[in-house]
Length: 138
Length: 83
Image (cartoon, rainbow over all chains, first blue to last red; front, side, top):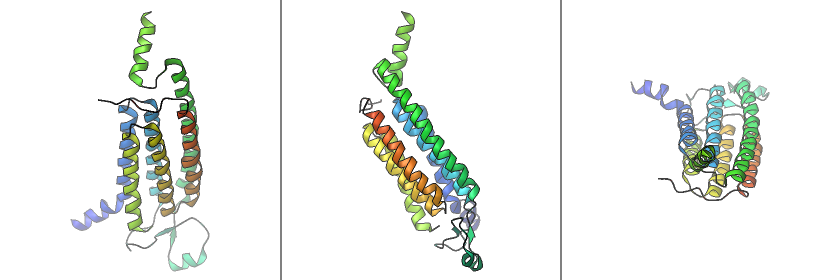
């Protein structure tokens, strides 16, 4: 039972942290009223997903605690003879694309937030909704 | 990966993430998001993804923080106190 717990739950601590980071981000995206806070939450949410994917690429086992188990995916013949494995580079490349897309979405969203501030004079979501409704009634 | 360093980095990740969404001062929240990105870059070096690590340090921590500060200079700095 304890061995099962250590192998199946505790050694996968990267994935648990990724879950918590994703939950923090999605909470901020939904519950915060300030639009810039929502953007910060969106950034944290995206980074949590990157952490999940790159943890999938780290294929070394944790059998020897404290030992480096997966090397960067660089040609290293002595390391192969010593029994080192390298991390899977495919998720790395996917997440490299994701980081650039994340910067682009942040830039566009910030431009929209600045434009909304010029239009409504505030970046609080409920005040924007109220002003919008006043404009509709007129 | 080196397990104790992993634990420290993941703990600081959670702390900075929670602090970045909790603070009322938006400038402090943005700077904490930059610190979060740098800790995440260290985490990716731990996982053997050095290419992602320096891209994150340049794009995620550098450019995004600069963009957010530039946008914040056109906005009001304080988030309203929420119930």
